Amino acid sequence: MSDNQFGPPQPGFGPPQTPGAPIPPQGAPAPQAGYGYPGPQQQPPQQSWGGAALPQQGYPAGAPGGFPPGYPAPQKKSRKGLWITLSVVSAVILAGAGVVGYFAYDTVSKTGKYKVVMPPTFQGMSSEAGADTAQQMAEQMKQDTAADPDSLQPEQTVAALYATEDGSRVVIAAGAYGKVSRPSAQVDQQFKDMEKEGDTVTQKKSVDAGPLGGSMSCAMVKSSDTPDLAVCVWADYSSVVLVMEKSDSVDLDKAAADTRELRQAAEVLK
Image (tube, rainbow, N blue to C red):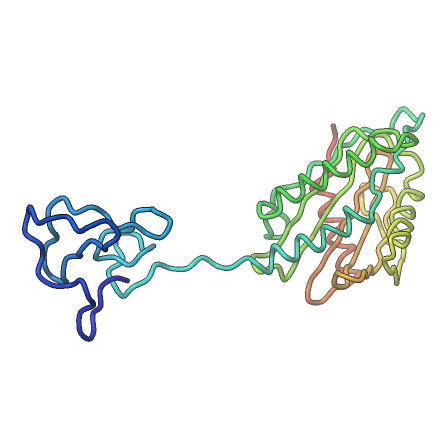
């Protein structure tokens, strides 16, 4: 804030220049109006180090109109923790989960009748903050599949990242839909892929897949650069989706319930 409300005035303060006063030589700071006096007519704006004009005297730099001197504008909440969590946890999927690498078209006519559309919010958490990362994840999965000549292509890859404002809880879902054969084998393959990438998989167990049927398993997953994650994978003849959950208290039973809830919202008829 340029105004000094207490103590002696800073250099450059004092009576205003009269109109027509000579312009200071180049390099010298333009004189400023003293506190309580009107500024000179047609006074050029001050220049910052980058050359951008500084705000007019009377309000601190960066304060919007309506905030008098001495009352700084409200600061935005820091989301640094959220971004770090999203980038670290999503790296597990990008590096280790071959979610779409084992899709195969089935000969059964009833397969592939569902699609997966991730909802914009889940349990009060928004997917907006992680939208760009989710898109990158989906594109990367699509590229990985296209680069594998032995893999048949899914209809679509999907991803979503849901998180609280402070990043204390994050739910990441990634997968694909199309026509899938051997759903239970697809589920097992996801955890095998994680172990191949050096992740530690413990407490793996089959769980109820819910009213949509198919196969689902959950396990705790730990890698060298991520916190403990509860991971569940569901698969049916239409989709294979991996759901990771990070929170202060990770619980497999809750993760399974959350995965079923997300699946109910996301897997719909084509």
